[in-house]
Amino acid sequence: MSTQIEKSQILGRWRIVEWVQRYDDGREKHPFGRDPQGFIQYDTDRMFCFVCSAGRVPLGGTQWSVPEGDKARAYETCFAYSGTYEIAGDEVLHKVDLSLNPNWVGTTQRRRVVLRGGRLVISARMEPDTPEARTAELIWQR
Image (tube, rainbow, N blue to C red; front, side, top):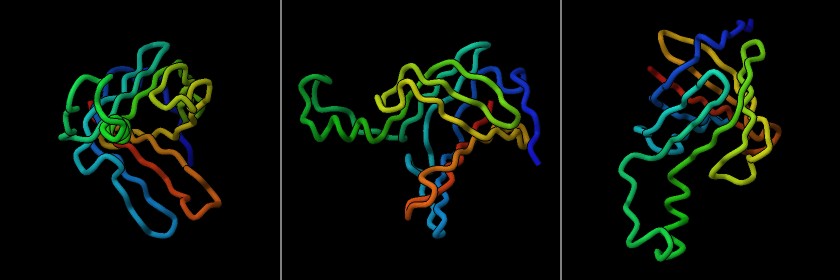
């Protein structure tokens, strides 16, 4: 049963508590470890999400002069995007206009939203009908 989410219920800044991906084959992964860092913020008309792994290794120089492998590691341990959003029943639709992942710009990221015990639980079904099919669940707390 879906529950209508009101914008007023999600407004503000939420810090990430957990990010887990549950695969249909039973695997479970934590993309940024068991102690991810970051937040999601909903203003009246825009949202912003920034998440990274705890204990990221500093770059060995400026962002322009480090080896490509170091840049790739920095990208693999950080996730950020922003845009406008709207509520549709028990979902929030993130309309992405800026993203660390350029493939997301111009897309709408559809997420199921549940408020559970003072926490905001945002989930998405990913890569259905493939061997990598999974549900990603991000848990946030004020």
